[in-house]
Length: 280
Ligand code: NAP
Image 1: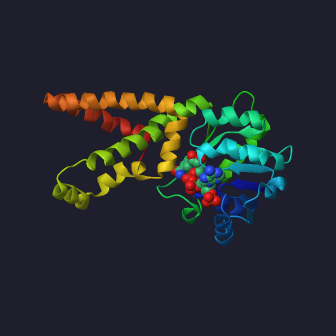
Image 2: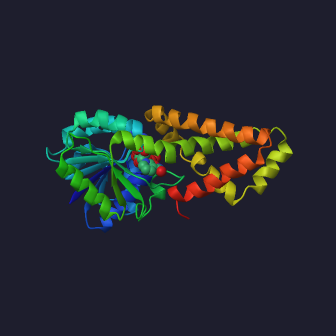
């Protein structure tokens, strides 16, 4: 199959590495010529160019630009696509993107591979990044079933675990487990930086170890991605953040009131709940 990838960064580059290894002809388009050149050097794509005309032969195109650039990218891409080409994206927010893009190209299927790392760009693209990770497909009642099946098959070929849900359910769920953690983790780092005693701040920075590494990782990641999550999933993110603030207030209340039994119960509950979300 001829597969086009637009936006050769961490996600687009990693997808290219996997799809090329599976024997597909991978055609890449990126904003900067230097990125296209590097993508060829790293073996991420067979061919790469800054012009969308390269994608006229593509059967499937995966748009991997930052969230805010997905709809404008599709608009520029459309004149170059063959009429039966299937389009998908990898944006971390689905509702706002699907609303705009499905009006532009009916053969569009929203997607979100839930794998990543703190760094961004083509240099950190990684073979096998999506293996054993969730890959969410978010069709609407108007999405052509054949297009859904093709995107699901592509996701499965990356050894990802495929889930299907509504765009709205997706945005609400990822607010809890991805967008809220990014903001909570960023707030944690920001709060630590408010330490006014310089010696104590330096000492804390020297003592920070695995616990701080785990809890600060997503807050110290790509700022552009965090901003896009907040901008494009504002309603659901605010809902989860307000609920998080209530929980923080409850914990503060327990500690202020020296309600150690209550605090112990809360911590026991979270100790039991965590494995429902992740297994170590
Ligand atoms: P990235 O490493 O920064 O790559 C983004 C790519 O898009 C770059 O190749 C860049 O091209 C291009 N680009 C940047 N701004 C652009 C613009 N205004 N117009 C057109 N192209 C532009 O980002 P990423 O982490 O791969 O994220 C890409 C998408 O994946 C986002 O929609 C994000 O929501 C989604 N996603 C990210 C993660 C994650 O953890 N990182 C996980 C799942 C999904 P040049 O280098 O040529 O400038």
